[in-house]
Length: 203
Ligand SMILES: [Zn+2]
Image (tube, rainbow, N blue to C red; front, side, top):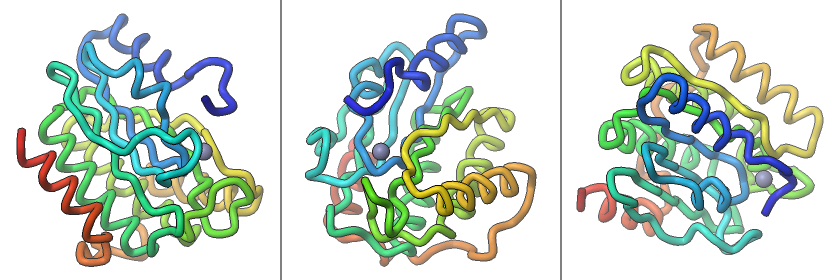
């Protein structure tokens, strides 16, 4: 229900599976919930997303399992989240989901409309969050997927923030270390982390 005629991420995931077999984890940090990707998850395609809620398209409140695959939704208040909290959320979420899913490839729905000041999204998150996000993605890909990760550009409607975010992702993917280290898990909103803990511990 976004601006995409084709769901590039889902097509890429299924093409990878058709060509090589294996499991794919789609990592979606776009401001909006990827309800189209969620709809096709299953059969070796898992999905993990942070998104504003309740906001367009109005989906993504719950996490659930579809046979062996996980759909993990971490809804974030529309009022926003601290940069520390957003980074800490991903530093917890992605390694935890990947340990359960054991993906062979990560495909990132790389939407930078979470950045503060974005004209469409805006979760109040600093543009510098892209570097630590890319670092946790890189490290999880190295641990589970032999380093295999693909980024597909999605939202992000301010050219300056988009440019800086993409440059940070490229640099970190090439091995640069982000300036910030591990974020403080207590910065994650309590209700968000509580719901995720319950779902991810229930197996
Ligand atoms: Zn978006």
